[in-house]
Image (cartoon, rainbow, N blue to C red):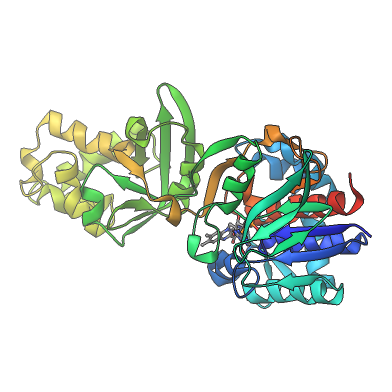
Length: 410
Ligand SMILES: Cc1cc2nc3c(=O)[nH]c(=O)nc-3n(C[C@H](O)[C@H](O)[C@H](O)COP(=O)(O)OP(=O)(O)OC[C@H]3O[C@@H](n4cnc5c(N)ncnc54)[C@H](O)[C@@H]3O)c2cc1C
């Protein structure tokens, strides 16, 4: 019987252990925390958006980097297969807006419990509070792993599933990166993804707590349009966040300081229509202040600040607005520049972009191309996706493929 050691008991590791055990291997799952799946508990605001009920092509469209790497993994485990598996294991699921899938109970803990129950039923040895620090190799092949306490675990195959470096309190602190690099694998520089931003402008901070709905966010790098979507944006004490901003962060390739980001407050109106409406409002409200008139276009907290943001004295009467000021007021509604300074720290990012290069991993079985018997799965790999359940599904599907391959020596 082949002995498989799985390092990391998160989504990818639990799935890898489960599928290796189902394929008949003797499996040991080694987790540094006192319990399995700590990150799963905080996913989907505690409800765990565990996958997305979409087709393969729709799935791949949500993966900005290396989508082709996922073909085989998805072929083996489509979102619908995962939904069926969770249901079979006693955690029925439901589909919500955007085809996001959640457990019916709305409890992320039910997902972890269902998987852990199955691991125990299959006889997987689960070692908690055990941090793996070294991969043991001999003649270019893996022969086991060594833990921080000095204990060694021999194995015919090892699956590294240690995650990225975001939310390190959940256990993902980059140990897998170090072990992969020590065994000659290339690391793509880890960076934040699904991340908020600090802004160089100080005005977003003055609007902290305000959510803008149905605004359009545009990101350009040089002349390249990287991202343009409509949705929800949140101003915070450091800058900007919210669904639109997190998604935009996946598409930013260079330095945030060089990016051109703009906000359209009225995406349903053409610039010409905005111009007409601004002229009308300024005319109709000619005795009121400019800031007051802006309430016709913006939520009140933003309306009060808006003239200041575009460099117009909002305390003056509308009747006194110059042509140049009117243009500034109109342009800002259509395309308000937002200067970014940096990503929020990687520890706060929802996922880590980068990691073990997909060039060092065979996409058909998740095996290392450098060390025989070594496999990778989950966020540790240089693949990441948008929000919507795709990141967890990447962990489940690469975990399943790695588990099967390791068990069968593929
Ligand atoms: C706040 C938040 C919300 C999220 N919500 C969603 C969501 O709703 N839907 C979605 O699809 N994605 C979501 N994600 C992303 C998703 O959680 C991750 O992409 C996914 O959990 C990655 O799984 P993984 O198993 O690869 O890594 P991890 O879940 O990070 O698991 C890695 C495991 O390895 C263990 N480990 C690390 N080093 C060692 C070592 N040396 N020895 C032993 N064990 C070790 C860790 O303790 C950890 O348990 C969210 C992420 C965050 C932070």
